[in-house]
Length: 83
Length: 151
Image (cartoon, rainbow over all chains, first blue to last red; front, side):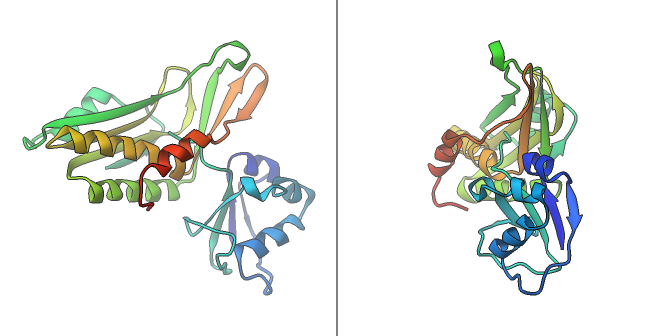
């Protein structure tokens, strides 16, 4: 799975992009976020407040209950501030 | 039409191009967003705009298509910049053209309200106290919520 991080989430995780092998027991965004928090202290700190985390799967906004698959591009980022 | 670019834009030239050759257009509405400097301890020396290439264009195209569904527009244009910008620089241009002003004005406001809460851009500010990420504003969510139904 391709994971992308933007804005302060990128800064806190410490990378803009990573490839991960999705554990077979993970089927949705909530499960993915729980698992990511166990990957490193930086991940845990970046993802400690999920109220500030927005998720896009294959470039569409989704909720935490949305399914995820190994072939997905999943982006994590804070609420947008353009315009 | 959608453009995501690092370069500045010329509003006059863009509006001229938008309406060129279409004499059914009776009015053009436009919004230009600029980099603000609030002064004092919040002095902003520069703004950096990050975005999600691919998803940005996709969301802007969706928003533009929705404006065309809701109002009888002859043309619409969204240009959004990314990269390093300074106070006074142009960030975004939204322009809409229609036979009558009601559609053009309403669609223009709709587009900027939706863009601010839907398009994946993030601003960080360089201030005397260091780099800080701009926080999303509740007012922007409220402005978008006026437009129903949601996409």
